[in-house]
Length: 433
Image 1 (tube, rainbow, N blue to C red):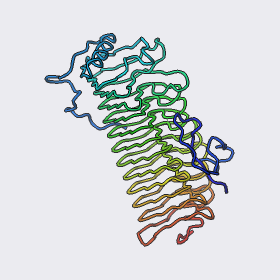
Image 2: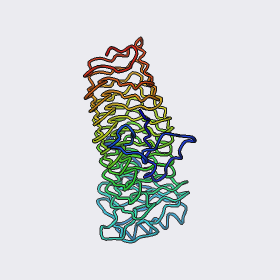
Image 3: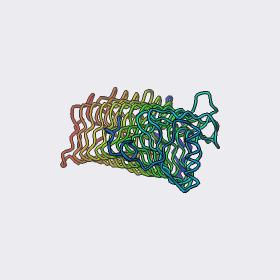
Image 4: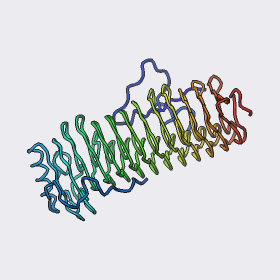
């Protein structure tokens, strides 16, 4: 059998460079539905703290901004000129943006500026206005959003990333108890495109759209997501979030995102990712990889993560895909009830995958590898891991291992592969068929 390559660099905004001497075809070069073995592509935040610095109440350090878009534009312009500032926006107010200011509805942030909202505070591009994003953070800018909704941004043309918010290299963004929703990018990063540093705290990125990648978030810098939800976003690939930089996710959820081609939930296209105490659930891809893809030569760590109810509608990889050259460690996690039309209901592996103290159950594949499908170049090592009650339509209900692939069960540590249908394993030493 031929190998798989899962990269979707042809549609990503910042494609990773191909490894030198690579012979395996990239996903853009191979069909997904006719040759399904040739590709692998494809919440609510916690209760808001009443002690958040942006929450109104008592004496505020900020400058009040009346409910008027022109007043907000003037206040940001003045704050930039003075080297920064804290602005208190009006409660139950929508600042409706109608003018295009260098591609955005508000002046670019070039200094440390905090925008404090409150109940019902929204910044929105007017539907009848020209197409522009809501906010841009330039190099040297540091924007903090507290208790705000950013919505209605819409970009047009190639390279028009970040319909809600664009963070340039050298810029920084922090959101707290805020919502980025219903923004549309003609390229990548429907909600947020981050090329600098972005921190999402107790926030939601939802119902955004990108024509290429990163329906919710596109990241090429440092992205830190905590106690936040990335849900119901859409894109061609990487519907929830796409990263070519460094991403850290904790106590968060990536759910209900939908890719028109590949990678419904989280697409780690290049770089590194660490996900802890989080859930990746109910994401879908029309072709491949419903949940998470660790792309070519990436390093991904999943700790106390639930990957559940994700779907590849017409091809392979329901839950987790591990591409050629990737290194993935899954610890103390659950991979359950994911579904792939062809192979790899729970996991599809082409590289180095280590599973520790993990439960893999209830996953389904239409053909082979209900729990785990391991390619001929892949190595899967299991410690104290249970692979149970998974189903494959033809063979390898628990684990299907291609000839040449390596599966190390380490049964002495407590690994078990039982109660899978129509059988437990194919070509796995130490596993009862």
